Length: 369
Image (cartoon, rainbow, N blue to C red; front, side, top):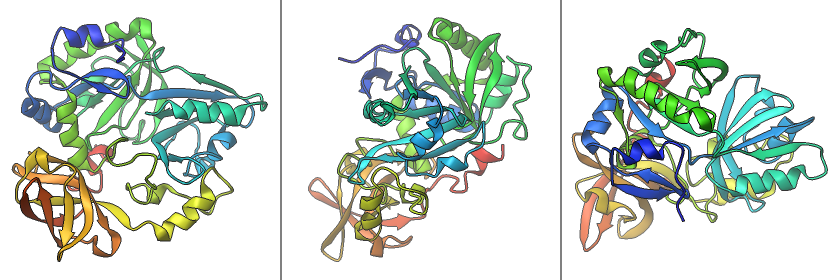
């Protein structure tokens, strides 16, 4: 049964359109999807991301323990930095895409989207003296994304939120927004300048109200998950259950770059060494002549041979309403300009592989703003 987040009372007053996302109620559309999209690309959007699982690890050797499980070499992190990557099982297949936040060598904060994360860390920590605590519901969080997101927040805090003081993929624990202490990260899921604000549950609605009051005059919108699909597919972001499941290697779903086979032993390393060359599919983007949302899941063909599939497709505002999909394509054919044919229902739709991701591939809007 789906759970309600701490922000549900405010969202329920705005929409009756809901879906289950990782076990929690999430709005599909709040006002109008196109208006929500434009808000994030032009001003700002506010999203409830409480459903992401949060785990703290504390004790001597906490960072080393995390490093023995995730694919990135997080031992290189310095305090305040964040690393994104994969968590795999012993067979080298995906459990989660996740972030590791280094508070100190013996205090690590972890965020993913799978209940198995906590179970894996708890099992690994048994007998070590390291405390592993899951606190998803105790600390709900919001994402504020868009080119005006910093300006909105600066009106609510005395903290320096400039790019120099608060770079991309870092976090802060010394910020108050409208007098409310928050754990704040500078990252997001939209390829825009953005922040995540984690807050104690008892102050969640206070934070919501402060952000809505401050952002409303600037055109900020509350965002539903349909609009979020537009951002993530244009920006090339993956999600569990669509780009990967427990049968998929990180190399297949776009996270091969995060597998550090040169670091010490870690969970799934031997299998990942084999998968690096054995895995044939690679994530990319495709533009199709039609099909829209219905192209999601469509097999892709080249010269009468099936070579991959579209994981999810949308009608992309950024591309002038062309059909854009994230796709997995056989790696020897995965090159921009490669012509493909998608089997969308009974119809064959022409298309091509394009540079990936489509929207701001250098992440300049997110990094340099």
